[in-house]
Image 1: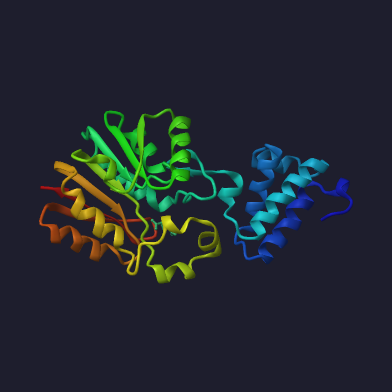
Image 2 (image 1 turned 45 degrees about the horizontal axis):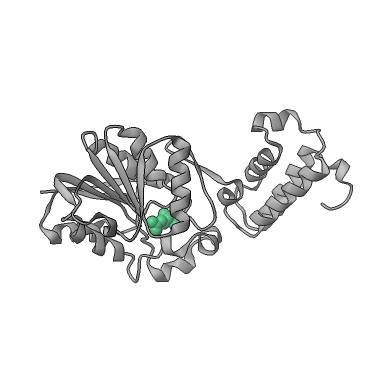
Length: 285
Ligand code: GLN
């Protein structure tokens, strides 16, 4: 696509990219091409369609080509565009931080149901901040805290908190480290939960570009549940809820970890839209 820049109209560029990205294994190549081009031209998709015959300038073509090059290497579209929608809110995303997943909306929905009267909420491992921000929006009466080990993720989460104008207090640290002696009414977490041996089988976008420390849950994927569940008993008020996102086939063993403590009642699971048990939770006695 190097020569005759003046003849590269929007339609021609889209057609070409569709074939090129599909060849590289990108599933929705045409649609992704449209999103990338929308970003470069600062147009919405309707505007793109009514301007099919419009040629791209040399600068636009160069910017677009750089983006397509990244996507062809299977870098996630969201890192290239710098954003992802979650719970109807737009979040900034950046390489080095896990991209929000729609599956995780189940955790937020279940948290909101049980947090209507919560005065204090904690999100463990905030990543981009999408869960903490969505909870703060939905539960304005609550004081929301978040903790994150990665300084890079923490900085991004801070920007997302500011972007949405919510009050979320973020702490750098590991799990309950910054909360000695503190108790909460609702604790949520989407910890790393992929079994280490399974990391190699993830799609290239995840495997090669997303941070391993946000994905790797140890040998059986359950390391973080083993750490958080017993520790949470000292950080929940009586009647407070602990809710997790879990990986495929992890609901059963995580329920058992709750049961082993003898400190939780009203254990439950909730499914994601694909029918997979995605959330596990319990109420502190
Ligand atoms: N759901 C993510 C994935 O599919 C994993 C996130 C996590 O480990 N918490 O890759």
